[in-house]
Image: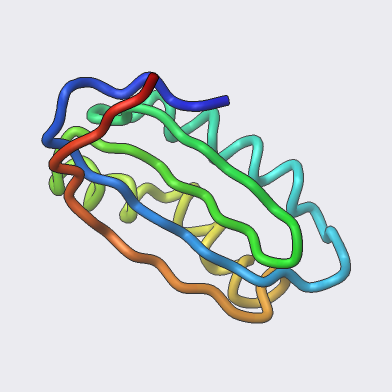
Length: 103
């Protein structure tokens, strides 16, 4: 599903990853993180796709909202498990969306 974001500017957190083979609770935690993020102040939406490389883009009102989400206790736990169990490699990028359009 494509997120219905507001008129720019807003921010995108782009999380790109290569997973390990075993699930080890990943699917359950991923669902929990989307649910929790959606309740955070400043959250605007999320889009995700996975094949060999997974890409999740979450959209946020401002940089302060992103900082608060990064420091969320449950999110910190998920980040730790990701490093230990779920990801062979990953990269997070944060960018400002200045324009969007659709048809």
